[in-house]
Image (cartoon, rainbow, N blue to C red):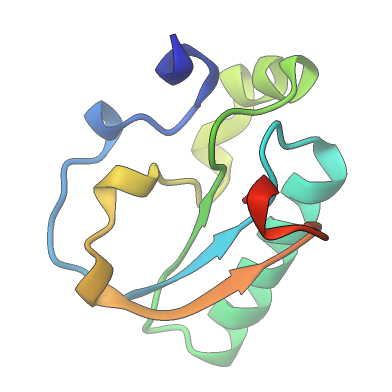
Length: 103
């Protein structure tokens, strides 16, 4: 199932109101896209510490990244797309994606 390949399913974070920034990367995210997304989230956190930034990995990740996240996702600002209320999003960032269809 698609949720089996997404480390950020909705069961991990119920939907609740929380103003935030969101960073997206491409589908089947690899390590460079994960690193770019986390880097942007850290820059935004430095710019405005009171506004959390969540990294959303749409439609799954590369199998090697999935194995990495199985052990380390608790160290990263990852959230599932369905756990974020659209009205709470302050800013959206997109990294490592040349085509909108891959987001």
